[in-house]
Image (tube, rainbow over all chains, first blue to last red):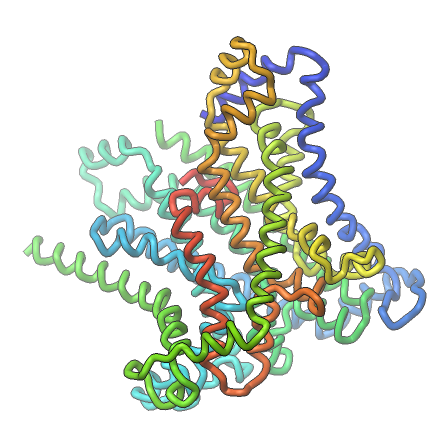
Length: 309
Length: 274
């Protein structure tokens, strides 16, 4: 539908100069506003090569010193590990639960599923900082209900965010609580837009439900799944608010991700120049991952289009 | 036999769904319950208690919480208005015209969504202090464009693409100018999509944390930043903490209910039509 329109729109462009410039003029303000914000982005690369600090009156070029210092420090590798662990674990868990729940909602076309389709979106609308508070009220050992529940099973004072061993699990759980709904919504939309005819012919051929799922549903769902993966993984690798609000990166350095380390180095330790390599590395990872996922998404889309015919 | 198996499967599926629903929804219910408990009953009771509005009174009347909400409203509302004014025409251009490097441009706008917020914010902190934009409404509304603008452009573009070009041709033949066609015909047609995209952009902006944390904080404090104050102090006023959380979450949930049908499209930036 959309593509047809665009092809027809070409005819519009064969006419006057005024019409030809119009699109650029119309897009320009939005670009000026957003690119104005992106200038800092280029500056970040420059400042990562200086000893800029809020404490010093001037700054000077120091070459790759910050980069060498950062990349040779244990702090960096720990931060990289935390970011990757957080990003990958939360995305995988969210994708798995989200797909499962979406398939259940789609299969069970009953009252329960219709109500839940509306209600399950709520956590996604809660700010990450607020979500952290919601879970503190749940997990807190004096007012939390989870503690009371665990007491029944003989577990007392479960540490949650207070111990380095369980802190990552706790923040991932909060992330899962907030963001699984995103995957559910996208997969559900994908499931509901699947064409009917391939499934009807499969029914005549008498394939099992599992066979149909693997050979029909999954390949046709793949484009939506890649979109969900793209948005989730990009956001999870950079997650900042949940960790900051819950423990500020602690206990110890167990949750000091790249984002948090950059924030701390830049603002608490006032070492602006050496804060930037952390975050530039993160940007590089995010960019490369995004390109890979987009590439696969396009391939999956072609494959799915083939199946529909 | 087969029938019994089917019924068991149906029951298991329902059960799994209910388990997930409890995980997703109970924390919100619990937050609401705690918000109604008095400071002593928070510790002594679970589900049976005497509800009180004292926490709401304390937070909404006797603290600056309402002024934080107004700050959030001004910044998020302002950001969305700017995005609508500037973004809707841009979305139209990206949907209708074929021009040099169009897709590159569109992707460039989307890629702002993936830029790590901290990376943008570190140098911006410095620039804002020099320009006097630090801790100002204008500064925050500007940086919030990174949240609201890509969303608006990508979603609204999809709705424009769904409108047939023939309608525009017909109106042109009838002698309407481009501006008349745009405002009298196209805008009403995309209105549902536009309103949902704007509301979703508002929710994202309302929930934003990193930008205001670093670029504001003294004069201007949106709710997400202000709420961390309730977190830090361990004064055991859990009821008030719950109220603060409830009050910040409820508007977004109500908006989400209003735009249900368009949520998928908005959340996936138009990539999934839903």
